[in-house]
Structures are given as C-alpha cells and as structure tokens.
Amino acid sequence: MQEEKKNKVKKGWLAVEVGLEEEEEDCEFQRFVIPISYLYHPIFKTLLDRAYEVYGYHADGPLRLPCSVDDFLHLRWRIEKESDRRRHAQHHHQLPLPLSFHSCS
View (cartoon, rainbow, N blue to C red):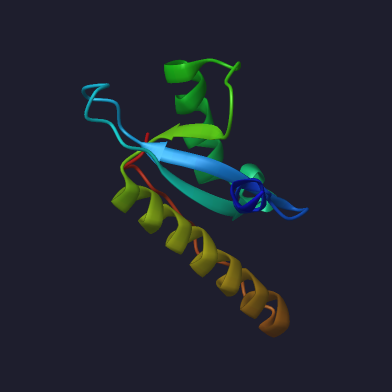
C-alpha cells in the first residue's frame, strides 16, 4: 500500500526516469515528477525525440529519458528560469530571451 502511494502522481504531473544506459547492468535510473507542461517546451521536445530514438514509443512504467541526471537537472532549471522570465516579461511587456540546451540531445 505504501509503495502504491509512492508511485501515484498528481493530476497535471508526469513521472519520468532519467539515466544513460552505457552498460545496462550498471545503469541506474532516477525518478522525477515533472509538470506535464514540460512536454510542450521546445528543449524538452528534443529530449522526447531522443527518447523515441533510443526506446521507441512502447514502454512499461514511467517515461525514460536518455540523459544524465545532472543534464536533466540543468534542463529543468533552464525551463523553470525561462518560465519565470516569460511571466516577468508578460508583466513588464518585455520579450523573453531565446533558450537552447544541447547536453541531452
């Protein structure tokens, strides 16, 4: 019962597993829960395309992302920073700065 609660994800959020499979035996994926809105971000879409190339569309369990944990944490930080910048720009009528991320693709 406790394990079932741990694996539940709130509405509007998505569980993902992040890791690189250099050698399958040594590969450990780390679980993250992210807002579904990330799926629409251009940088994240690139990572999703890469996930499709590596794993295909069919998977049991959480979505696996072929990315190091450090790179994923940086990507998540960049997306949040851009979101904050956009909210600030809308409030102050400024244009957001362009964003790119290359480590996970």
